[in-house]
Length: 208
Image (cartoon, rainbow, N blue to C red):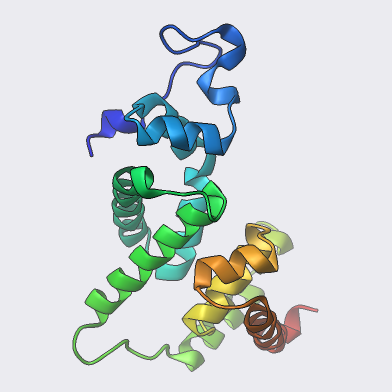
């Protein structure tokens, strides 16, 4: 998909022939998705502007590498553009987009891991980096340092726990929505979150 497919109508301007009260950027996700499925690139651009930052935030914290996350998001948006004609609204557009990103992250992680599987995270190295962050006298603020430590601590979580935690605590999806993204049940999501919170609390115990 060319980059221009993600461009949006300028703020306050209506698409050609549209009534001012029906400006693309004021429509619901569902209306935008239907228009995009018919080839409306401006409508798709509004969806990208609306949800792209959250999707990127999710991808970069799962992949731990901004370059990989950039590529992953582009692949996910291309898949979404191609898949819109078959989107039936069984989930919200937002949930559907997060699901596509999760699939792209999983596929990219498998390719990066190679035939031997994913390399285990060096827990001691992560913990050492967390201690360094806490003891760094040059840190600009406790809150900034804590955010950095939390990002490091997230690396110790298994992928599904990390994904569930990010979708709940950062993106504020409901348990039902997270279950749709992960392809599981709300009960299973609750268990994933409990284990993730326990691990993070133990990892960041010195920050209390």
